Image 1: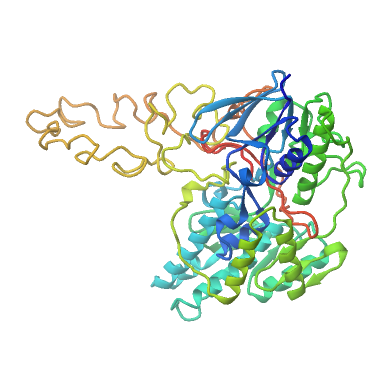
Image 2: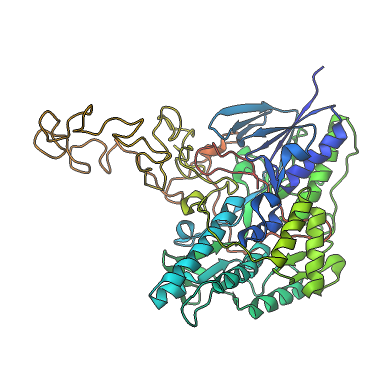
Length: 598
């Protein structure tokens, strides 16, 4: 008799904990398959330190295969679930497709960036949910300070040195705190214009910083930020964003080249395609993390609306402290449902406090409800993170020690470009690269591999190379583009020995728009001109018609639901016992930005 198979979608806090606990419970009595677009678990609470140059990226990335024995890792992104057939369809990082059969399915896909209908934000802002975004922000901030130091115009210098962070929750507060310290240290090494210094702004529509945390933590964090020179504006947000600045809701215009979007998260839209009962985008489950009417289906983390037994009538918030503990209870209940160990139990948990790292020796913490600030809180915060990390503890501690005694290396590597980390991407842990089939916004009808598409996806065999920038194809001879004519691997240049004659030259074909030649682009009568059927045009996600989706259909054909109201909830890191939750599983090879596990 074959062993039962358990498929886990997502390797965030909930999915990782579920896989790790199941690997101990089952002891080869079941096959455990973990589907995730990356081969690491990302410890999100320390991501601001990566952007600030304190920690190297691999310090916060814990190997899945190295820390999850008896768990089979499948690299890919789930884009469709057949509940009746008990199968999960996925796309791997190279565009290949596959199917996983399951006897028990655990959905731990996590969350994606929360988008609000604010003009210009999707085009000019960047989120902070994955390693590519953190690396991009470090490079971008470094570059802006260096360009400001060389600028002759005082207004340009001031704009480049202004950094706006929207969302004063856990993530936004830490990004602003670490960012201010990073740029201050960088400026001391640059001969900037007299009187000019970096300016960080923290905006939120809430009444105070860290609105979902204890009020004493809020006061401590705001005091530290203001002492460092951060411009904290509560009750204010962005009304419109442009390339040169932002218009605030209070009527103020701020010239800036940097807009960091940290207004919170929303559940991964993957679960919306299942057609099951939902609660504000989250899949309704019982206290045992099981979907009613589907004994083989479990959900945990940010995609699950888990009843809060300590607060009747409410659901557990989307925080890592709950996601981490969801994973353990879910694993026990899955094992119990298969009769291979553990006892079925309901989820119940009380907060044990939170920690907020404000950079340097400053932090705000309330372990076990005891409010702390200053160096004592800083020691508790870093000690907690070391204890909570499932790996890389020695390396993280070594980086902290080196940062305390050596200056930081403020260099831009240029590995992640702006177009590689769009805000609308639901796979922030995977950067877009030339040659990958990213043919349009996530969930758009007609995107590569999605319903209605007939021609090969860009970057795949038989298709044209993926475009290097939105609306712009790579230069010939560059990575991702076709070889330049006359270069090795390309066809000979026209008019050169071995090549075809140049247009309008003796023996060559007439030039376009000349007598006897084909009509020029956009001229009447030329196939493929703008507005004709010969050329496929891309549109923004908001401009495309949003097709309805039926239960069990592929997520590629479904569009995320409308953005929720402007709430600025953010991820929180718990003091003893929890961290910010991430999750999301999908694949870099999926067309366009698709959902993923953080």
